[in-house]
Length: 389
Image (tube, rainbow, N blue to C red):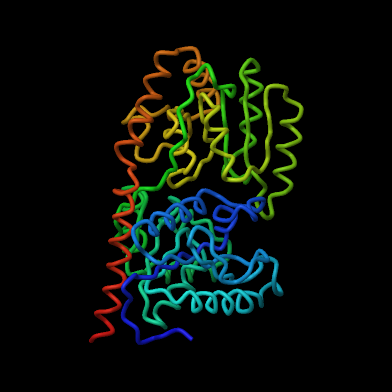
């Protein structure tokens, strides 16, 4: 039973709610789906551990033992993703088992990210048991009710409720911060993301992938544009990495089939997180074809290796301002920029150096994690003060 009266520990306990985090954290489950936000939560958990926090996670039920730990991070399982009867499963097992796992975690503060019903359910839990609650946006859609990627009206209501009840809200960049205030009346703090450094930087002559695309295969990522680009540049080697999303198997199979007919396009499908870095190491250029993002984890993985990015999405004109790549508006423009950059070794080298330097100067883990630690402590103190009144 959760101790409602406790006010803290010598080592504060933080619990991250990320139902799909286990494939990133635990090698045994790496064949299952994960995305950039699961990578970010896992990197955050490791960083908080290094800061002295007792860190737990609430994750989905993949068949693992409840309370199993990896890298000192204890995990509590909620529910299987296919468990329960449609409509009724919102209450059981999802709500009931989620709260039960949160109670077993018994943390001083809870953290989650990405819009969804879980934000509201976690907010209700933290109110009921008087615990700190921190939420971070994961996409520009999280700050805009017209673009938020939530299917059901009920879940949109829960998300808005949770967002407004969080003790501290973190945004990825200033545009999200502005839209969050305009659309929801919620104030936020900018928090940078985490990135794992590669073992070494590979020179261009050791790279055998001209153009790399990494993402989950879903409509918003527009994966169908990659085969089009490969056909437009038949002398360049393209590589696609990404697994199928739930409900998007048809799209995955269609893109996979088309890629198989293009000799200069290698379609790798889903790759475990521990192996994805090898593809970024081998790439000369990374492309992003999505029309809605937050701050892509793949940009950081590219820049940490000095890989320029060419994309339709440039958060706050960062790529243009810092010369980390090129923002484009059409597939024809993307094709032209890819070819021009691959032909111009000096320009490629300049952008590569800028990208690597940007990560080194702005994304030092010790500096990044301070913002999260401050948010966690702010949330904890808010609850402690309310308990004292």
